[in-house]
Length: 139
Image 1 (tube, rainbow, N blue to C red):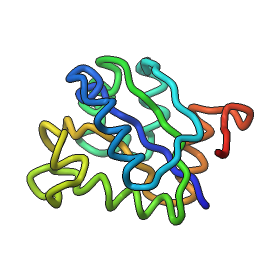
Image 2 (cartoon, one colour):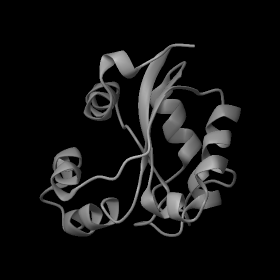
Image 3 (cartoon, rainbow, N blue to C red):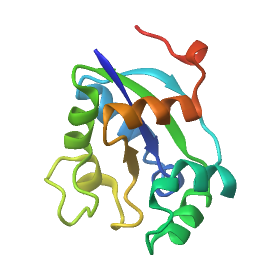
């Protein structure tokens, strides 16, 4: 079993889709090892998404991620990072395969319902950003 991080983004939380997304993740075999409802401030969002700092979409990404509450989740499954990337679908919901979280719940490429770690190394860093080791449980 490995861990990865998902974040249910402000658009999905505001639209009341968080429960459906959590149920989808559980139905795909992911186990939640930590979860919280929080709101990122600008500095936190800039730090978390710092890898994109030089990209033209960085300011709008920070603005979006601070626009409302988010739900970070530490998830556990076999090959968790790659499995989650497959389950959420392409960044642009118009390109996401049917039945993926983004195909079902995302509004647009920018308001795409969920974040997922893209590597095991980033998953470890991202989980530690939101959760202390004592917050993580294995069921």
